[in-house]
Image (cartoon, rainbow, N blue to C red):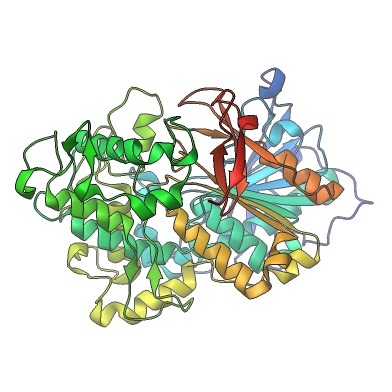
Length: 549
């Protein structure tokens, strides 16, 4: 057994095969475990060419033992390139996790024309956050019934996995990483913010996409939305979602100076658009009398559902962060699972409203049918995190009046949410953060990320935050994937240059890979958005400037 300091630069490197069976002592891990073990190793030959090339590496699988014998293990993967660049990249997960973040792919929204981190020579790693999901994958919340598994998911698994990975890296190369970065989106974005906030000494930078930073508060908003969608006639069909999308696009597309199929001036759209009074091609969107008259119009109940998405959850009690709200979503122009032939559309459908109305019991998730992703999340959270009663009807729990469950809910917002608003220690060691969020995310509210950004700047001062962090919004981009504007952004090169060379991020550009493949837009520092200059190709970023009005 060896500890974190057991290998120094004077030690001999250990070959891939000889890492098998390696143990890491509990004393070498910053949070309580019963140690870790490497369960398998394999040399993976080089593959791919050009930007997709990945050199030979050692694939290491292992497990971290829980303190509670009833808690599941943390399973992890670590990839050790033969031609190591001296750096490490930790990857976050998604949803309720439950599958290993392998570290083999790209950072969130990373471009296909640039090598993935492993291809750049990074030692990459990630874990399943401390539980193994069932067939429901990232929607499986059963682990929440165990305190240690819940704590691991909430963030503890990050430190445990990091310490084990770094110990194995030192053993293999006889050298510690010179830089360590984190990349994650959604739950992985929350994990990134937790990692640099809770363990600033361990990280040099982070790429944070569409972060579910206040995950428990988001669950409460999911509960409010789910209870509305479950009302008779309130669940909009895919055709009705398309109708609402088209009406918003017709009203708001030109607010950025050009009709380009994207709503870039989201503040103006949010301020002016009213679904109940909207018209499309001269016909009212609202059904006559508010009744459901088919897919050519929206009933009052369906309009109420979209308005529930658009408006904040307001609580009569304070969460652990002190907040009493979770913001609404940018609803107008968001793809909630519209009909479409794009190969990305099934992912968009899965991560939004799905195909089945919420009910009790919640409809099963299958290859072709699924309830809204957020509704499953709420159902699992209520059953296993809050009440710990698998038979509890989550539709009966009102997040705005939870009664006897209020204290448990508040406690969970302290356990799960990234509530830290002082990142001074991370900044002091030269740490940098690049954060971005699509303006049309149907699963994690872009307005919630704005809320986090505002809280951080209020606590630390705007100039201080600007010295180590950037926040960009991407028009048309949804949650992790979008058939409208699927973002590709070389954030890693920008982060490396900022951390390692002191190069402040220059003007950034994001490319679309799906809606209009190859078109580009400027990435604007929030609260700015891309405004068309009035001349030139509408698909080129150079013909836009970043505006606030």
